[in-house]
Image 1: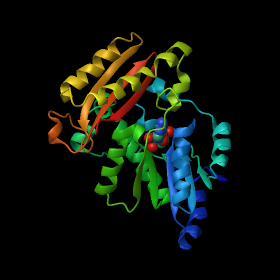
Image 2: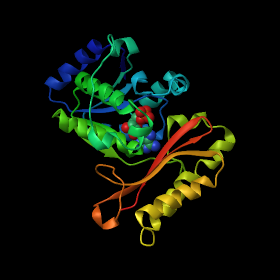
Image 3: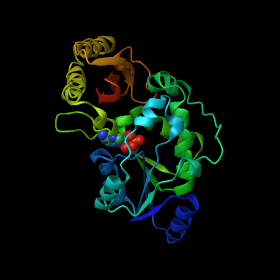
Image 4: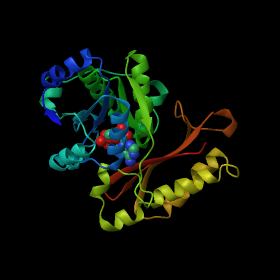
Length: 280
Ligand code: AMP
């Protein structure tokens, strides 16, 4: 694996490969890698000639300075894990390399950007769009892999690609979970032992709720999840939504939508967790 910190370094390494018409699979991450990330990478490697991974903790997508400061950074361990998935190129730029000047681009994702993470984390998706666009311009991938763990982010990226008519194919990848059901996340390592032991309840409750589709209306299902989560005193809920799987708007009647997903965001101690579960 070759590691680059500069845009010019990575570009000049990739150009000859592109000239040979080798395909590039790209996985953007913020590091502190886990099996969820590695699954995206294995898939990217199997579907492309070259695997490029970026590790960049993008400051402009953090609306909470403490979250940015406490975000785990484990470069040596990450490098080792990247070797295990046969990563070809790691791009690990500094903040100065990515933002020599502040980027004031402003993206409007309409209603998709106004709900859930868009409402609770102002500026978050704009920061995501700025960095992902930049990373796409640098790596010019044929395919880029994103996890359904961040379902709304994935929808935003798909919309960004359509809006800008980019030629990259976005490949959605299923959520990878711990054996007890907790969705893998770099933030999980910040959970205290007692917090970690109650965290799997999120998935258990979402799964149970989704199985009640034939007996609950969308609003009843939303309330069911809210009420069950509220029984755990360690959870402090940001939102619970039952939304369609395209524009992620609240569902009124099941028969109005082609697919529906339950979304939840909550704090467990100082750590903010998100998860989702497809209903159909
Ligand atoms: P992050 O490093 O958290 O920005 O995540 C980088 C990519 O990995 C994003 O596309 C995430 O959606 C994806 N990802 C993170 N956790 C998981 C998971 N548990 N399962 C599947 N994909 C994930």
